[in-house]
Image (cartoon, rainbow, N blue to C red; front, side, top):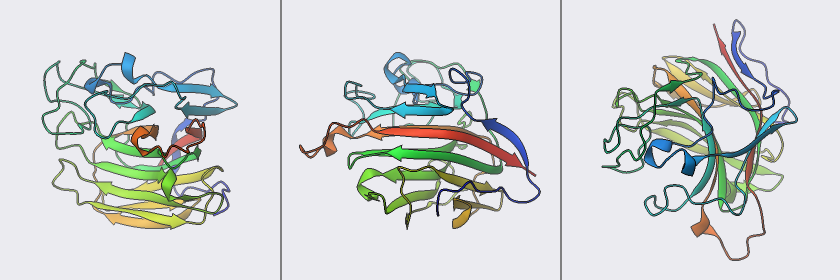
Length: 264
């Protein structure tokens, strides 16, 4: 796993591509906030730059806590998503609620950017993490119907699972949430990669199975994944309570070179 660009399966055609070549995010595809219904757009705005043909998501030292006083454990996050939806203020209708009974604080208008329901989906990215931070690329159901809530996690890397320059535990698999048709099937697989360098993280997704790949090599296969439209989620997280008191001054980041989608 050298970080060389991988090749999609034979017989697939490119249907989506974002190489982050423009001066800013494509707002027809991306919302630069992380689950704003449970807080507000103002309080969930991502810290990001688009430059050098890459998206840089980061968490500077002065960035505030997400959903302050409610989410446990406290976290800071910079994320973007390709869909957004909620019910009215005070309702429980929203995406990826983090506890039972959570209610909408700021109603969100429906926004659907790129929300595929199958295909070969590949992210080329690298992460700068410490023991208290993580980077992730995952896909979730739109939750316009609460049952369409499952997650396909393509890559999730915690800094405390990284051997600097040598290896990383890369989480990948399925989470059902409120979708009874999907089984929990998730594992963090230790791979001989340097996450500070660019790698290709992909899923080959059909109604029958989801095959997870890193740099073109299959790593895991999960049967019976969700088969409805899903939105893209890209984020870097920081967990202040995991500070050791000896943490260097660091700004965790997720650097994305490109995201591509292929279909038969």
